[in-house]
Every structure is written in structure tokens, then in C-alpha cells.
Length: 501
Ligand code: NAD
Image 1 (cartoon, rainbow, N blue to C red):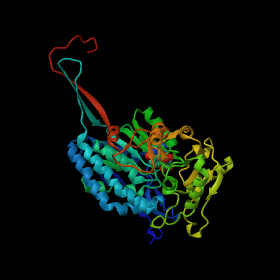
Image 2 (cartoon, rainbow, N blue to C red):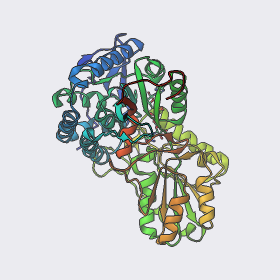
Image 3 (tube, rainbow, N blue to C red):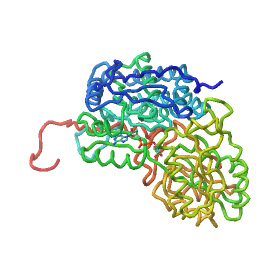
């Protein structure tokens, strides 16, 4: 039975600040809409700068408190392990909230939330493995060693497409490293984050270690990024927002990691297992209705296989079942927000205007049962030139651009001829070709004969305009640490004080 169609009256969520449930100081709220019904199902606080200040101050106080700063790393790790157990326990409840808020499939969100606990487990395990080194310097009678220390207050800003998973990619390493955090979720999908952070108290975290501030980016964003007590901003979202945050952070000398958009090439050679490639292309662009940063939105097909492959692709994609995202039979859900639905439709018009030929979809579905939801049909354009806007700009929806290529060199030229560099897919049975392409593609992730695989153990991030820094894997924890070099003289007597020692 549908879990989204008959919703209770709007649920009112509050922020978590200093361990307390907090109403917005200005008394304003944002209605959270269900993308399948178009109806309000929850209210979340529409915060302003005063709430930002309270949350950052609570995080800063917690950062200095003996209850957190005095915890041994193993104890800190155990709190994360305890949290991971609570996520396992609550996964289904949290996934239902995510589906209500962002309209993605229950199968996808439940899978994500169940997998999420591994990030907290993995980084909990790393908490007591942050080791400095002793440097055998060239100075005699001198002892020099390094310490890797937390930064302080980290602001984590997340988008609407996978709220809890993308938060975990920041929160787990930030906390394992000993920081405290203020979370700013998307104004469209704040509910799951507000429900999730209630678990921190039960897990045993001291109050103030994790805080939230919901609201519009334009109303709380600058206050968060420029707050003097904030040390770092960890952001996932669009490249224009990322550029704005990066600029402000540079001006105020704050550290940043930016996980931004993509326009990833999914490259099919004629020697590939074309049935597998077909599934990989579908997963890349119609999974999550294309609302994923790693969407394989540019399909590059070797010319010799082009017509046959496109024909099969269109035939398969035509059968995709659009419907209630809460149902197991649904394959393509709605677009998360109404403005974004219109943006996706706008890109379809742009593609037509540029001369690309639409061979599937191209608008809103005609089925009256879907009329209240913000759906866009799975859409495929052929005859796309890589210089067209439809090939260069991130649509973030179920819209695929197909571009033919001749050989490896041509595929690499087209694939890399773009500002983004988040991910790429390669489909081939030729092992040398697989290695060559993996080396030459300018992307933070390359998948060979698979697509959309991620793990808490594997670093993820962008080349070029797709971002700065890495999330997941051991190197992610470094993004939340700073190195201190400590020098101790082992001998008495100071040499000439007027020259460098
Ligand atoms: P967005 O940039 O509009 O918003 C992201 C977050 O930033 C939201 O919480 C928003 O409120 C906040 N924000 C907006 N203006 C701000 C400001 N001036 N200061 C501070 N915060 C501000 O992105 P979106 O539409 O929510 O998400 C879609 C985008 O996210 C796509 O471009 C997608 O590629 C990207 N994304 C990237 C990854 C990745 O890991 N690389 C993952 C998922 C999504």
C-alpha cells in the first residue's frame, strides 16, 4: 500500500541546538511538500542569523567542553559505533521520511539509510587511529613530533537529493576527528535530518556536539559561512552555490570541501557486453530520476554500435514504470521540487531548440494518476553535439544526451571536453582499453563495466569544477584535521637569537 498518498496532518519539526529542541527565533516556518502528492506534509523552522549564532555558539562551547574535548579517541569512536546501531534500528522510519520529502524510491532510500550506518562504523573505527609522527630532523638535541588535531566547529551543508547519506559523508569523519558540527540541510528536505539528529542524545553524545539550522540558503548561508567561530565548511550542492561559499570562505580564511555537480560520460565501446552496458546506462540516468550528482547524463556510444544500442535503450526505457515512490513496483519517481521540475522541462526545450532529436519522453507524463506529482518522463536525445548546452550543463533529471564517437582517442576527447569531472563509466571487454581509459579520464571516480557504486571505504570527489577535497575512505578524515608540529629542545643554552634556528 502507498506510504505517501495518505499522510497525517503536517508534522512540526524543530532544530537541535545545544541538545535542546529549538523553535525558530523569528517564529517563521517552511512548508515541506511531498513531491508525489504536491501537498504539505511537514513544517520546518525558517531560521535566521540569530539561530545561526546560537547553533554555532553551542557547537563551539561543546568543542571546548571536557565532555567532548576530554573524551579519549576510543570513547569517541564508541559513540559513533553506538550511533550506527541506532541507525540500523531506525533505518526504515528514516527512509520513509526521506521518500516523503524528496520523492525518491523507497527501495533506493531504504538501501541508502541501511548502508549509512557503515560510514559511522568505519569512521568510529578510525577515531583512535589518528596518529602523528616523530620527525628525525637535522637539528641535534631537538625532539620534533606532529599532532593531528580537530579544526573546531564544522558547518555541514547538504542538498536535497540524498540528505542523510550525504550528511553522513561529512558528519562521520568530522566527529571521528573530534570536531563539533552545525548541520544546514536543504530547505526542501530538512525533515529526515531533524529526525535523525535526535538519535545523538540516545547514542550518548554530549549536547552541542551536533546542532542544526534549517532555512533558506540566502537567509542563513552567509551567516553560517562567515561566523567567526566556524573553522570549516563542508558543502555538497550545485557548483554556483559552491563557488559562492568558496569565495566567502576564502575571504574569511576558512577551510572548505566542496562536492559539486557533474555531467558524467558513460562510454560504451562496441566490444562491451551490450546488455550489461544497457543496464548501466539506465542506472546512470534514470535511477533516482537522474537526480544524482553522478548521473551518467552524457552517453557516448561507439559509432559502430550506436544505432542498435540506442534502439534497445529506447525500447527498455519506454517500459520504465512511473508512480508512487513508496511502492516496490515503481521504477521512476517524481522530481523533488516543483522549481526543479520546471528547470528540467526547460532543459528539454533548450535541447530541442539546439537541434537535438528527442527519441523518448520529452515532457510530463500524460497518465492522470501522476498529475499531482512533479514527474518528468524518461527522456533521450540523439544527435547531440558535445558543445550544446544539453551536453555541457547539469540537468539533474532523467534526461540523457547521446553522442557518437569513433575510437578511444575520440571518446577521451569528448568525455574530457567539459568543466566537470565527478565520475565516468566505461563499458568494454578489452582490459588494456579499460586501463587506458581509466588513466586518461578526468574524473574523481571511474567505473568499468558498472555504474553508481560507492563505498564508505573509497574516496569520492571531483576533478575540475566538480569539487575540492574527498569524502569517504581514510583520506576523508584528514579533511577535518589540522597538523601541529611540536619542537622541544633537549639541551640547555640558546644560540644566537637574531638568526633562524
Ligand atoms: P544547492 O546548491 O541549491 O543547495 C545545496 C545546499 O546549499 C542547500 O542546503 C541550500 O540551502 C544551501 N545553500 C544555498 N545557497 C546558499 C548560500 N548562499 N550559502 C550557504 N548555503 C546555501 O543544490 P541542490 O539543488 O540542493 O542540490 C543539487 C546539486 O547538488 C546538484 O548540482 C548536484 O550535482 C549537487 N550534488 C553533488 C554531490 C556530490 O557529492 N558531488 C552529491 C549530491 C548532489
